[in-house]
Figure (tube, helix red, strand yellow):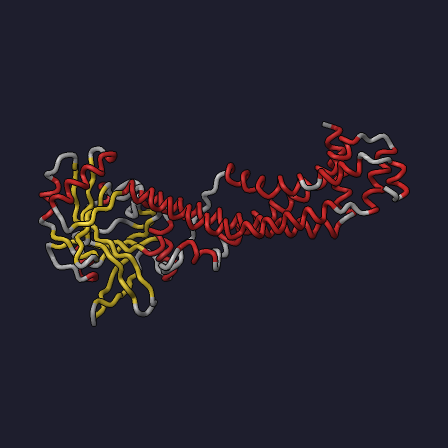
Length: 394
């Protein structure tokens, strides 16, 4: 251990003596690590957001299609679907996107019929401040804390939103918290009656039907039964959605990663060019070390530690920079590539979800080739005659 500590101190001293090369190589490695880390952090954060949101979705979602597009569905289908084997409950849901012209943005309006005790544990109806709305009282709403903060509202405040050519006054009775940032960013909960008024959904119709199964693994069988009953229906399977979105995130993140590979290759070529060119000063240093009794293995270890220190500092700087870029600056430019064509209003702040193993793989991806590139020139120099190295003729 003392030997390695001494070699590390010597490596740090060598890095300071060659500060220009150290800064250049460390900065280049930090930029490459920053690019890969930003893609990884944002991809995993979005994956986490989706899986947390999907956990509260029904096993099956039944929509009615008209001309290939979702349309309102009759609530008369509820008892007929509920009578099928393997289905525990069917609920007609009223929800949709409500456009506010003054803010030039969409909010998600969700109609609520049930009491808070019947809400899922991690659903948007988990109220953090205030109380849950009374579905039988018109004009009460509950919204996410992020959305309320964006609008400058709090519990007890009132907001007037346009419904057609008139305005409707809404009283904020509670703010909900959730581990899903998307819910707190743009969701407004109100009574089903108010939601129908805002979204112009007539009585007896619903946006879709939420189907819960006794055995979620049999969702394919239940979906086939519903499709036989409703030929014009589109049935969304939560498990299939999970797999589809995982594939989407993997594809988009993989494409961005592949686009960054030339930058990594260019950096490694630069590092190889810089590290293989052992200058006269470095050759004399190796010759002096050999003359003082250092073995070839000691020289290699010292060079290994020197470049490992450079690589570690560069990689850590890149990862920290990527963390700030993604979770504090909201990844400008990169976020649009991973989000796709759609945009949310207001913007949400995803939470970090990357694992230590993924960070370790990323660090090894950029560090190991860089460190390995330094061993060949150091070995060549350390195997030569020390006197020739000191004279500068080797």
